[in-house]
Length: 403
Image (cartoon, rainbow, N blue to C red; front, top):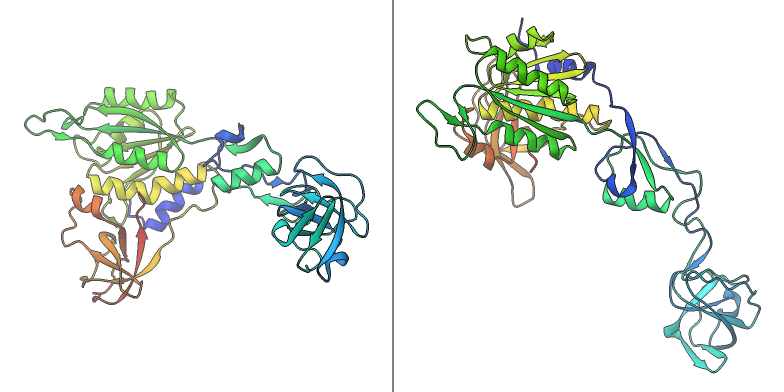
């Protein structure tokens, strides 16, 4: 099977991925979820003209000049409308959020008034309509204010509440099952024996999945034996995982058993090699309804592949419309050699110049086993296949790395 370009590989990963079934969630639980339907305002906000300040509600024509003396005929507090009309030469005390009484169109703030028993002296002229929030200033009933595919922010929840929605239709969270393979892996906190290494890949990948709003299921570490790997794959299916992510064992070496175990369970293989660095031996397939991403064992390779393929897949299943990472422009901080036939994703620092322009500087050592540079990286610097040598100061494209 020939090496696929990154773009073609991503297209295959997303080809049969459709948003998961919607569910209705209480408003308080919907933060970060993705709307499964447009939300139309069920009411007008504000439903009536309201005072924006503490002061006196009156007719604008009465305060075109000042000073003027007006008769006080009542009081309007928020939530307690004053139904009596206010006529010429009259006023009503009003507080912020109070409904404007019939006949009034203006509020004069209390700082510009003086009180003499039931007479209010207006000391400063005011334009008609001042300090009044008109009905429908924010929105009106029937307006579509939040659209399907939007990932809900805290601000969106406030708007949905004001629209009078106690529950929201959102797509179900994708479930991502994480399986590591390899006799050499031991969990953190263990003293590695000869030839053993401390397992790290899954912690980054599960955090990445949770950061995208998915539920992460830890399947642990499977040894390099087909039966144990098959048992772990079955646990992923039994858990209701939408995506199975494996780390290590996706190649075709004698001890790379993941493909063999997945094939035994009936996986339809899509591809297993990509023209990218790091991450060439990445696998993709379907096992029934479950998507399968087989990541390389090297930690940087696993991270890069998860960043480029797992995140878009999670977003698609979650119903989001912003699927792909969007490259941004930067300036190279150091020279780069010509590239070969694979797309390169170089870990690098991203720092601003004095003028604010971002400068991307690739780390001098790009070995796919090194976690220290990955942890320090602010971006991946994109190098197209067969890109010519580039000099410091040249323009480049970067993908910013999240937290």
